[in-house]
Length: 212
Image 1 (tube, rainbow, N blue to C red):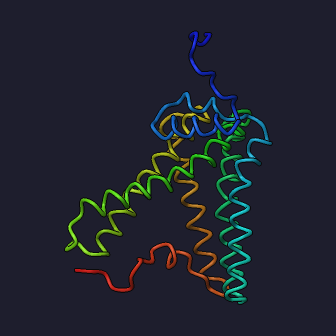
Image 2 (cartoon, rainbow, N blue to C red; image 1 turned 180 degrees about the vertical axis):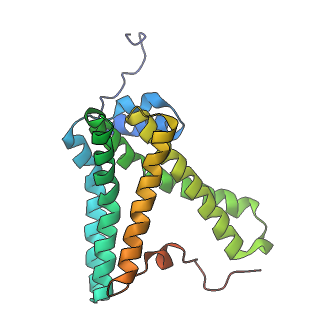
C-alpha cells in the first residue's frame, strides 16, 4: 500500500524515528510496531549498546566508591541481568524454529524495556497527585512497584508474542523462563562468596521507615 498524498513519510525500520515509533506502538499493544525495528544482528547490537554503556559507567562508579569484592559481585550480576534475556530467548527461538525472527524481536524487546522507565515516571506523578499524604511511603512504594512490575510483565509477554509469532502460552513461557533464570542467578549470587543478595537492593524502599 502506498501512503496518501501529503502524509509524512514513515521512518525507515531501525532508524531512530522508526525505533521510537515502534516503541510507542508496541507499548500500546499494537503488533505493527514490530515492523519498525531492524531484523539484523547489527540492530540487536545497536539496541544492546546503551545498556552496556550504562553498565560500564555504573561499574566504574561502583568500584570508585567501594573497591571491594561485593562491588565486583554487583557488577558481574548486573552484566548477567543484561545478557540473560538475550541468550535465553535466542535458545528458545532456536528450539521453536523462530531463529529468523529473533533479531527483530530482540531489538524490539531491548528498546521497549526503556518504556518501563517512562511508565515509572508517569506512575510516580499519578500516585503523588492522587494518593493522600496519610497513606505513607511504604504503601505508595508498593503501589508503584506493583504498577511497574505488572506493565513490565505484560510488555515482555506481548513483545515476545508479536516478535516471535508465539501463542499465548509460549509467550508466557518466555516471561517465566527469564524470571526463573534471574531468580536462579540471584540465588547463586547470594550463596557464593561474597554473598551478594540482589533482592535486598531491588526491594529497598526510599526510606528506612515507612509511614503508617
